[in-house]
Figure 1: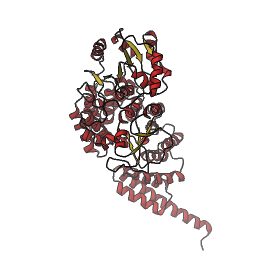
Figure 2: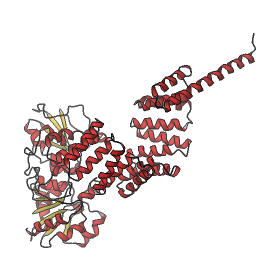
Figure 3: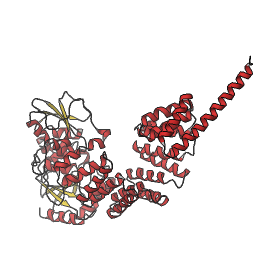
Figure 4: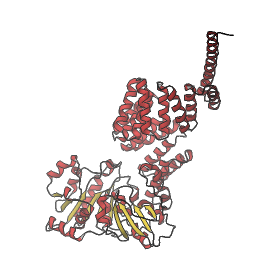
Length: 566
């Protein structure tokens, strides 16, 4: 009978043999994995796990195969098991973070990258991927810092420079973003993503020809790169080459059938060109593009087909104040179909819109909703009503002022001795196209004839304009006295003409039926169409357009002539 020591020695011998056999198998699996033979590698990892279910390396590698074959949730499960067995392996935490990122579990992904970095402080790849997740969480400064850490550890890390550039672009630090993309390209001259992103930044910097060349270079490096084709389309759209832009979006969609941004951008190009029939259909892709702000209700979405007789319909704004003012006109159309309309809008609009014809109740966004049968976002109503250029409803005045407020503001303004002009020269600084649409007050003032009275219709004035406004006392500014849009509307009512860049006040003037002159950039927002000085949305509106990008000179010269004619 063998002794206990002999028994232990025999068991150790068997274990060592099994361990050696597993290591051989694992090496074979890794070689196949590295050659891209994922099915064969998976079979070997699974074979190891049948005999050793808690073999952490095999669990991890099997998780990597799952991630590479489009099964990120399975990857999370497998790599999570590996981490529970061996929580001190930095690569496990790194790849776990990548799988979490793929499943849009961004906060958890950042935590996982943090664990990888805590174990291995020189883990440049973990810093880089952490930066991407932080950017998608809109923690942009932290994202740039994380990419900087990656670059400090690995000076030739082209991907980190590229990711850093994307975060800087979103911070609107466009020149710094451009420099970051240039550095990525210098390190890796065949870096398609860097060329495409550089093109997008050059477009924002109003260098469309250079932007187009950069997108073309990205496509030359990688013909099947949908984002580059979509970015190219946006540049062509800026150049008002709409057919070519649509062709680029179509190319992106042919490569990637669910390319949300390409569909969305195509809708904007079609609408800008006046093709409302197809444009409104594709405009619905905005719902997928903005998943974070998408509303979800158990009640059905009204698409224009179901009867609304005696049904309560919730209409709600989803974008800016100007959009709400422009599209609230459809409330009357819904009401005429028998619907009882509840309108939900941002709080500053509640007082103004409660007088809107066809509305039963107006609620501030965030207020508890009453019972309703159908819902529809305001910007889906043109599709529901099949609106085209000739069937835009209520292009005449459809909003009314509070008479008491008009009276109060008339007293505040005092007697009128010359024509009154309401002016708006800038919009929200956070708007993505603000650098194109807004004008510095110092640029506008020389074009305002002194023979007229000027009233600022802006509530907020930027720090860069404040000194200019204070130095020109002939421009009356009421700022904090404008409690909401009901006050702004009353002030608009007392103007002979309203001059505005593309902001919510321009929509307000048009909706009130006031003579409204809108100053537009070379490539305007889709709603203003091209090559016309009127708008199908507002009968009282006149459009003044740039004839070259970022050149306000001719526009303001024409504006001065129009003001002098008053």
